[in-house]
Structures are given as structure tokens and as C-alpha cells.
Image 1 (tube, rainbow over the protein chains, first blue to last red):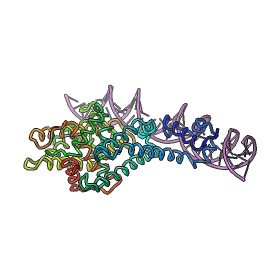
Image 2: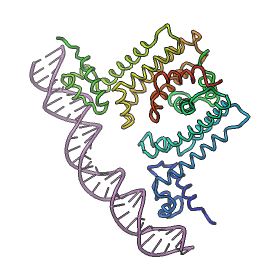
Image 3: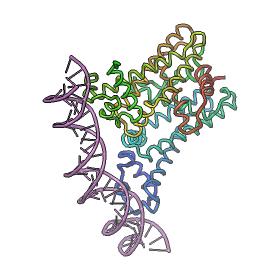
Length: 190
Length: 190
DNA sequence: ATTCTGACCGAATGAACATTTTAGTCATTT
DNA sequence: AAATGACTAAAATGTTCATTCGGTCAGAAT
């Protein structure tokens, strides 16, 4: 059986980062999990950081896939937006890797972890900017700055999905959809 | 000249906390700034924590005053809301004490500092809940859960005032008002 | 020739110990 | 009766040094 060395190293590393976080994962451990000599890792990756970036990039790709997969052309812009954002955030929430990274940021504050989560957020923002521009062109939404709008939409979602449940009962997907509809789509004005 | 011991200690302590933060401020220093023996402080406050709480409470009172002061009955609910929130956040932003506490949370993560900023946020939320209930009764806004609405409004403002400028040019007061109007008041739907 | 390996090295880490600082007390002074 | 500051126990900080870890490379395996 021929195995793709690079792939199996990446897979082992992802597992290990996910279980132990960035800092607590040693290259020895990755090598052991991948059943590979430590030196082998360095024939595929320049250093630990680059290996980590590779994994994060793959993760970002997966996030984009989840987001794109949640969009179906027959639904309205707002339905699609909600479904895409909610599934991305759910995905992110359930993914061991991001959980460990968020913990690491809280506990230690590794630059790598901060940077990595920032990159994930940027990818989501880029995705949002695209579909907002599309929606504006189609006339589904009012004229607005796509960047600020994407930023506001993401912040609102993060607030409703993550921040709210820090001190209250979590909101269901339906509740979040309704609140998003009320606040951002229809507006508060009577 | 008779001086109020408790008041001058509080004042000295506030100055000191504001310049150095919670952790770096010693009781010796407070006593020196207040021109008072260290023991005297303990006749008015049980411990350092209680002295700190006294100051934070005074700060929350000031925040409430600023918010209330920004409201004038002849203006609309949304005008008032924006003016109140914006002046509170500006006040908070310019206040040395909160700046130092925010830094401290980022750098170290003192429980006291976290708790204190959480309390400030709670006070603002309570204030918002009140004026939202009022506005709903008057029929200025649609029916909504006041707590969630207050939470969303505050998060949106913090996002626009603090978070946005982490990676972009700061938004002016007018821009923020316009964005708030667009996103939360009128809604994105065309 | 090419891929893979693990012993080896200097740098980084953190455990253990030593020193300093600080919150809070209380006997003494005012 | 109120105020004080020297004093103490505990916490924070600095220092040392053995261990660990990321990364290299000479040589083995294919």
C-alpha cells in the first residue's frame, strides 16, 4: 500500500493540534502519530508554523465549502444568508480545532492561535462580501458598503450564537433566524 | 480645614488605579497619594477589593449620568438612543480607568478587571432595557424582547465603535449613526 | 539517486529555590 | 477616639539550571 506521506502527516498533525492545541503539540508527537520519522516532516514542511498554516488553510477551505453548500438558488437572499452563516458558526463551534484554539487564546494567548482564528474570520468576511455584492446587484438589499455590512452581519451572528449564551440560555437556530430577520432585515422601526 | 477622609482616599485611589491599573497599584501608593496613613484606609474600606468596587460603582453612576444627560424628550427615540450610546462609549473610551482595565484584561486577565468591565456593561444593558421598554410602550418600535434587543444594540455599537477600528479607519459619529439607522432601524430589505 | 531516519545540538522552557514586594494588622502616638 | 507606620505572612518576582524540544544532517534504506 502506497501512502501519501504529506497527507498522512497533515492528518496526524490536525488530530494532534485538535486534541492538545498548538502549544502542547510537539513535532515528536506528530511524527509518532503519523508513524513517520521526525525528520520526514521537515521534508514536506519548513517548520511547525508552516505545518499549522497548512492545516488552518484546509480548515478555511472546509468552512467555505460548508458555507457554499448551505446556499440554494431557489431560496431568498436572507434565507440563504442565515442558513450559510448559521451552519458555518455551528461547524466552527463543533470543530475541536477551533475550540482548542479559542481556549488557548483565553488561557495563554499564543500569537499563532490569534492569527489563525483571525484568518478564519477573514475568510468568512470575504465570503459574505461576495454574496452581499451579489444581493445588492440583484436589488435584494438596499445600497450599502459591503465590507461594513459583512462585518456587522458577522458580528451580529457571533453575538447571537456565541456571546449570548455566555450568560443566557442558548438561542435556537429558528430564534436566531427570527431575531436576524427582525433586527437587520425588517428593522426595528414601526 | 476639615477634609472628608473617605472621599480623599477614594479620589487618590481612583487616580492611582487610572494611571497604573488594578494590579500595579499598591495600598502604600494610595496612602501616599492621599496623604494618609495606610491603616487609615482600612478604617473606611475592608480591603483593596472593596476600595476598587467603590470606585467602579462611582464610575458606573457617572456612565449612567452621561447616558441620561444625552437624552432630550423632544428628539425621537432613535436619535436619543444613538446619542446616549455614542456618548457613553466615547466616555468609556476616553476614560483612563477603563482603558487601563481593558489593557490589563488583554495582558494579564485579572478577575477583578474582567468582573469590573462586565459590571459596566451590565449597567449599560439595564439602562438600554429601560428605554427600549419605554419605546415599545409608546409604539416607537416593533414588539421585541427588550433584553435581547438591548444586547444586540450594544453589541452593534461596540462592534462599530471599538471592533471596527482594530483593523480599519475609525468611523465618525455621523457614520455610526447612519449605519445604525440603516442596519437596525430601517433594515436591509429593499 | 532519492527518500527517509533518528542521534545530536543549541535554544527555549519551566521546576525549584531565593529574594523582594505587598495587603492587611495592631501596638503605639497624637 | 482616630490615625499611624513598623511589622508579618503570603504572594509576586527574579534566578538558576536540568530537561525538553524544534530543527539539522550524516548516513541508512529503498
